[in-house]
Length: 86
Image (cartoon, rainbow, N blue to C red; front, side, top):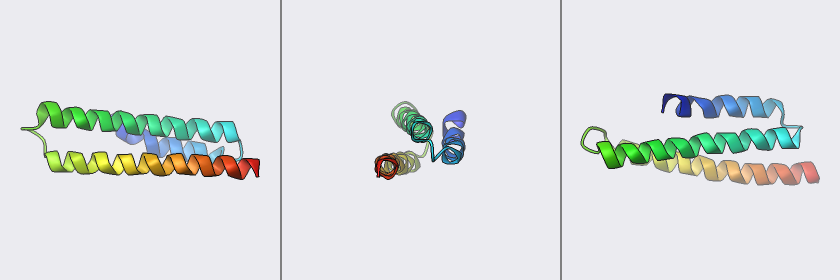
Protein backbone atom coordinates (compact mmCIF):
# COMPACT_ATOMS: atom_id res chain seq x y z
CA UNK A 1 0.00 0.00 0.00
CA UNK A 2 2.88 2.34 0.74
CA UNK A 3 4.29 1.98 -2.76
CA UNK A 4 0.87 2.13 -4.43
CA UNK A 5 -0.04 5.40 -2.72
CA UNK A 6 3.32 7.08 -3.42
CA UNK A 7 3.70 6.09 -7.07
CA UNK A 8 0.88 8.08 -8.75
CA UNK A 9 2.16 11.61 -8.02
CA UNK A 10 5.65 10.63 -9.21
CA UNK A 11 4.20 9.09 -12.38
CA UNK A 12 2.22 12.24 -13.15
CA UNK A 13 5.34 14.38 -12.65
CA UNK A 14 7.38 12.13 -14.95
CA UNK A 15 4.61 11.92 -17.51
CA UNK A 16 4.03 15.66 -17.56
CA UNK A 17 7.64 16.14 -18.57
CA UNK A 18 6.81 14.02 -21.64
CA UNK A 19 3.47 15.63 -22.37
CA UNK A 20 4.51 16.53 -25.91
CA UNK A 21 5.21 12.88 -26.67
CA UNK A 22 1.73 11.35 -26.99
CA UNK A 23 2.82 7.75 -26.40
CA UNK A 24 4.99 8.67 -23.41
CA UNK A 25 2.28 10.77 -21.79
CA UNK A 26 -0.36 8.06 -22.30
CA UNK A 27 1.97 5.44 -20.80
CA UNK A 28 2.36 7.42 -17.59
CA UNK A 29 -1.36 8.14 -17.33
CA UNK A 30 -2.07 4.43 -17.77
CA UNK A 31 0.51 3.52 -15.12
CA UNK A 32 -0.97 6.11 -12.76
CA UNK A 33 -4.42 4.65 -13.24
CA UNK A 34 -3.04 1.14 -12.66
CA UNK A 35 -1.44 2.16 -9.38
CA UNK A 36 -4.64 3.91 -8.31
CA UNK A 37 -6.78 0.87 -9.08
CA UNK A 38 -4.28 -1.24 -7.16
CA UNK A 39 -4.77 1.08 -4.18
CA UNK A 40 -8.55 0.75 -4.53
CA UNK A 41 -8.10 -3.01 -4.38
CA UNK A 42 -5.89 -2.81 -1.26
CA UNK A 43 -8.40 -0.55 0.48
CA UNK A 44 -11.26 -2.88 -0.44
CA UNK A 45 -9.34 -5.80 1.06
CA UNK A 46 -8.78 -3.77 4.22
CA UNK A 47 -12.51 -3.16 4.52
CA UNK A 48 -13.46 -6.77 3.77
CA UNK A 49 -10.78 -8.57 5.78
CA UNK A 50 -9.78 -6.11 8.49
CA UNK A 51 -13.06 -4.25 8.92
CA UNK A 52 -12.87 -4.61 12.70
CA UNK A 53 -9.42 -3.02 12.83
CA UNK A 54 -9.62 -0.15 10.34
CA UNK A 55 -11.90 2.83 9.99
CA UNK A 56 -14.23 1.55 7.28
CA UNK A 57 -15.65 4.98 6.48
CA UNK A 58 -12.19 6.43 5.87
CA UNK A 59 -11.33 3.51 3.59
CA UNK A 60 -14.56 3.92 1.63
CA UNK A 61 -13.97 7.66 1.31
CA UNK A 62 -10.47 7.01 -0.04
CA UNK A 63 -11.82 4.41 -2.48
CA UNK A 64 -14.32 6.96 -3.76
CA UNK A 65 -11.61 9.62 -4.15
CA UNK A 66 -9.29 7.28 -6.02
CA UNK A 67 -12.16 6.32 -8.31
CA UNK A 68 -12.95 9.97 -9.06
CA UNK A 69 -9.30 10.69 -9.83
CA UNK A 70 -9.11 7.69 -12.18
CA UNK A 71 -12.20 8.83 -14.08
CA UNK A 72 -10.81 12.36 -14.38
CA UNK A 73 -7.47 11.08 -15.60
CA UNK A 74 -9.18 8.95 -18.21
CA UNK A 75 -10.97 12.05 -19.48
CA UNK A 76 -7.68 13.98 -19.43
CA UNK A 77 -5.99 11.23 -21.43
CA UNK A 78 -8.78 11.32 -24.02
CA UNK A 79 -8.70 15.13 -24.21
CA UNK A 80 -4.92 15.07 -24.56
CA UNK A 81 -5.25 12.58 -27.41
CA UNK A 82 -7.50 15.07 -29.20
CA UNK A 83 -5.02 17.86 -28.40
CA UNK A 84 -2.20 15.96 -30.08
CA UNK A 85 -4.36 15.01 -33.06
CA UNK A 86 -5.81 18.48 -33.49
